[in-house]
Length: 284
Image 1 (spheres, rainbow, N blue to C red):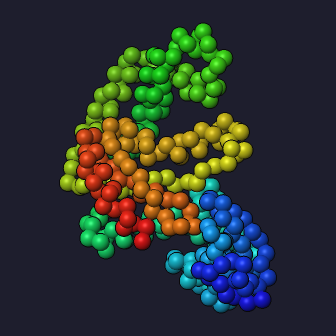
Image 2: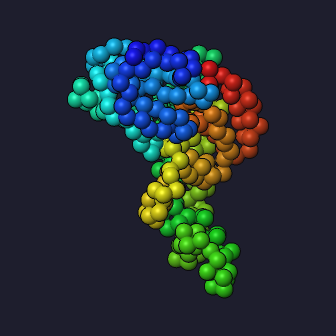
Image 3: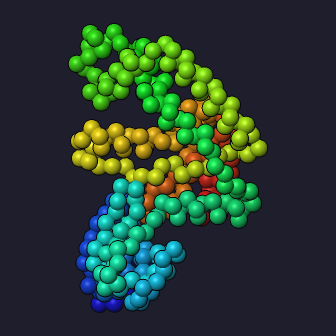
């Protein structure tokens, strides 16, 4: 019984009354080291790492990195679908959240800033227009229906129902609706290109969610919700007719987070050059 071993082999570590255990998004075991007032993880290669608490007993650390927090006998832990860790801080009578994804993205931005990048936070209200354009199914439904409509009639039984249902939304999109879509997209592209013209790239977290379990997608509504979340950034830049690349921003053993660089169409070389310069910096 004790509290030792961080950054060393898990088999030689000392624990104190471990209780709950779960797996993070990478499949690493994470457990509540209750008597040590910590949450710890077994990492790739059989090492052990404290990810929250471990600084003695107490209550402190809200709004700070979890590694500096004070816990009091945590007995329950769980990850949500967005990769956040929830801790039952039992003796403090609190439920606490560790937002790994948000902090990883912010850390990457801070690292880039220290390396000399000029980062400005801006609003891009035009992105809200994408939802309006996709309300009836958007370009994907209209154009895929034009291609597949005869095949759906003759061989509809071989289509995945979740795919065919999305294609069939295009049947209700009229020629006038499609022309409206084309005009809306032209306006959308022009307004965003004007807004970002003075920047080398837009920088965004690639997604805000961890991959769901297949079992959680049995319900069609759950599948649709997760599909939209996964495609969120892609849809924005595709509608812009732009280019983008995603770089891993997390460190070994952390929840996967991507840093997305995006720009207007025709900026591929600049985005690739920026990515090449950044990829070895943002994970330090």
